[in-house]
Image (cartoon, rainbow over the protein chains, first blue to last red):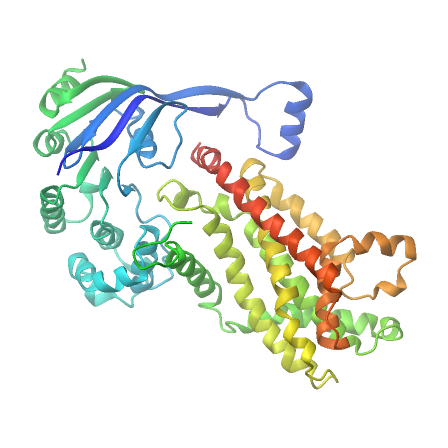
Length: 245
Length: 260
């Protein structure tokens, strides 16, 4: 499989941050409109990012906290719009952030499996066809009718993750998701990612686990304070981050 | 709108699941379950009927049925818009974690209320028959005012949900507005007791027309004026389309707002 999976040019994202304590009410907006004083300042979370990621590539994004890694993933996922530059993704892209978002602790594991599949864009027919594999992968077969909220944190994290790896995504954006579950479950995740890579799926991994980035990714982008410091071989990006260069 | 490989609406599964989850969460774990849904209009009916039967009964035949129909229609509008107004803000974690048309959040909220209202309406039909209201051919026209009500509520809910992301006090503002609207809609009183100049103003309220259309279908046995219904349908459809378009246009602004 060849061709471009993701392309970004001069990508930047700014947010309006509150500059003083003020509630976002209609009254406050009216006051701002009358006085002409803005209670906001512009904060650039990311600037000047160029990316050219090929189909089937495993790409890492590293950097300290506040470097703009998650913002970059949100832009690549199409959840945020860039403030400058452009980004293009080919195929079905979905982020793996807090996949448990939107799941309901008071509903059963089965209900949540169905809800999660819908959130990841699976049709009902597709979900039914893959349900057996999803349940087997998650290891939640004995808990299908238990309340999702009753599961331990590790077990609960398996549910959305198991649905996501079966959701037939073309580009997978992983934000610290490889820290999910116990050692056995992590080993299964790595196996799945190897399989996905073999199928030509594109993986983009954000992680503070530098060994993972060094061993698993071909190339990586090193970000600091929202600005790209280095983009190239993963091992070199990791070395630069460790040296603080 | 694109379709999936099976030719069906690609987000129908999501819409259905989100609606189902809300219905289950609302009724689950309560002793009375669905009965809670009926309790509110039943209580409102009991209070208003006890207070106003002597006065309004002089002006309206079958006041009990008249009042019940008004309350069920009002209940859907009030609950639908009130639940939907904060729906986008409440779903911030969904918005920043999944990519899907954001209107589904609002639509599923309204649909969950619509489901309860449909059940309320079925109970209403059973209850008004012993009150002297007999089934008529005009009941076949009920889907028209129901569609107008659904479109109007959905459109307004979409607009309110977008505004509520921008302004945190929007749900409070709507709470006040909807209370005022209750008295500006002939739910428990007939229009005939209002002075002519004020009546003309109340007739501009689309909910007045919708409530009247329901009553005409169910009690009077004659469908409402076709011209008025067509105009209402057009207006309510326009409102719903505007709501969807506004939400799509501001989709990224909403994501920025809920993220920061």
